[in-house]
Length: 193
Length: 193
DNA sequence: CTAATTTCAGAATGAACGTTCCGATTTGAT
DNA sequence: ATCAAATCGGAACGTTCATTCTGAAATTAG
Image (cartoon, rainbow over all chains, first blue to last red; front, top):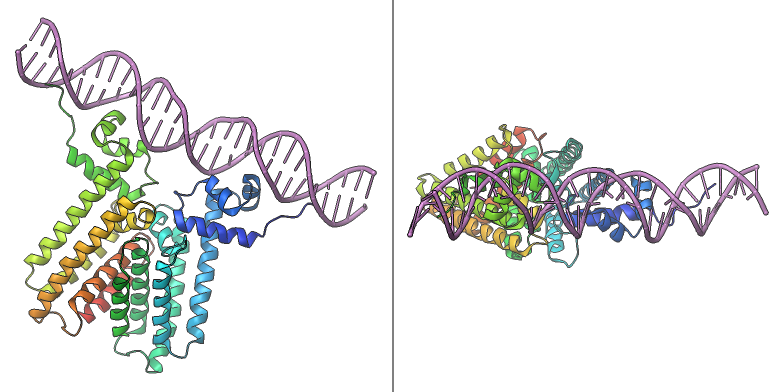
């Protein structure tokens, strides 16, 4: 029996993901959050606790969303190699679109925070394991379907794909990188699958 | 005809590299710099200007040092593939050593700053081009010496090597990553060279 | 020795930070 | 209608930030 929230909590979290993704944890001020989320300081703190708690919630939400997305796309796929190609191609395209989010929020958080923040490190490691497993199962299936070369252990290929994904997500953070550089990386990656 | 500096400017810059590498630009306070460099605020500001100027100088010094190192090692090499293997193996070993610097200062700076700081983006892009060129020449020579497969354009391989290097430098920032993950990435990378 | 010049340590500065608090407002149950 | 509970905008909090200032110490040329 009380007043209702004027905003949707999940929408606000998505906004938090955006601004943290764009500016990083230390680069985002409380004022940035107030402005970008469109709510008052009190609402923000009442709903999400302090800045660190909000960041963790945002990163966990991002993790779940991107994991669910990758997982769903790969599980539905009937041509694994082609799907992986499309996933990377999409990541490359997004790097050149005009939006505030570039690269990968998880990669950014790994680099900025994992070394000193064990809570972040846990999310990051959990994500790596989960993503590796999804790629492992996909690659294994791709090999069984003769869509991916069986000359290499699918576990190794899964880790290798993830590593190259991280790499291009770093490249994506720097504006000046020509698209050809991304395309060349993808081309070589696909040549070994 | 005046008092002499009590510290060596290059040593101080190396210390600045360390602390910025460890904590990032936004995560490093002026007090952190004073403490880690072992000089007073006034000396710090008199010598290097403001925090941003110091960061740029530190990053440029790091760029030159790591470029000179990679360049020299590859140019001296008589077995390119083996040398690349050793370079990656060394990077992996360092990720597990007990020191304050993990991963790559250039990768960290790319992720944290390149999107909003054109001066940083310039250093980062310059570094990518220079590194790519060194790897390109090395791979080309490796192919001529039949140490590296000639089935792929050396330009593409150079970009691919750099991308995987970035990837493992991201992984290195998170403490929990098992060494086997790094080793597997390196194994696959070497298998295509 | 003196004068000129620069470094040094640490205090002082104002701005920006994350966070808390206040009081008005809105809601739904009694 | 009244009351309890939670939201809201925005002011206020103490702290930390990057940077500047102050004045004593050190150095060297004349």
